[in-house]
Image 1 (tube, rainbow, N blue to C red):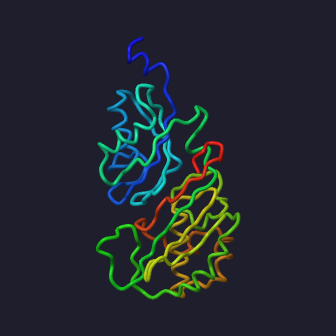
Image 2 (cartoon, rainbow, N blue to C red):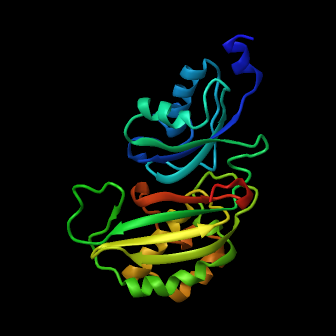
Image 3 (cartoon, one colour):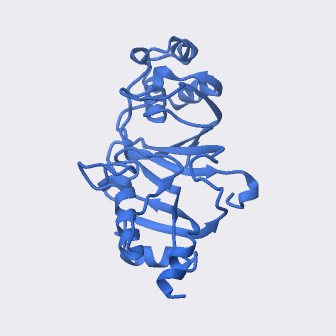
Length: 261
């Protein structure tokens, strides 16, 4: 049997763990109006495999959003060891995208359908001068009452209808989501990091929640108003949507038997 016949006899299910700076991309999903993470990786895979390749990710990230731990799967070839894909791709990818790991998964594994939860981080640099070095922050030069922000966070925990925090033109079966953990850490003199973990997120949901909390910090919204805003299901009652620059997909959790966590 020839090498070509061997490579086409079975298409192993290859999973990539990917880190990227989304600043120069219009999001994860392939689009006609600019470079995306998906299209950049898919095009390289198609050159290597000489066939059509589709990457199925744990979920989409919007334009300008970053990832520390995105997962995406594709059908590879027996011609290459699973661990070799990370090296081959990193050799040709731009510096803003790195494959941290590549491995073969069971045929029944799906990068999106088997997700249990995701954790996002949102980083706010709260000082008078912007950073010359760190592109992965939302620069906020004004004063904020961070204790008020902390006071408002628990209202988001649990299962709620988060329609008031959903971006326009989103198509989903339900706007009910469950927030399992929501914390705020000060990791430097002027750097504040929100960590939010849930079973799923609506379009712009995290960025609108953070924008609402920053308006709490400004004194425009009171912590006691948050439950009513959630219950209203009215986008006009929630706060602004903050820029994508500070948002990171930080962690994706799968069932333990897949050995990814």
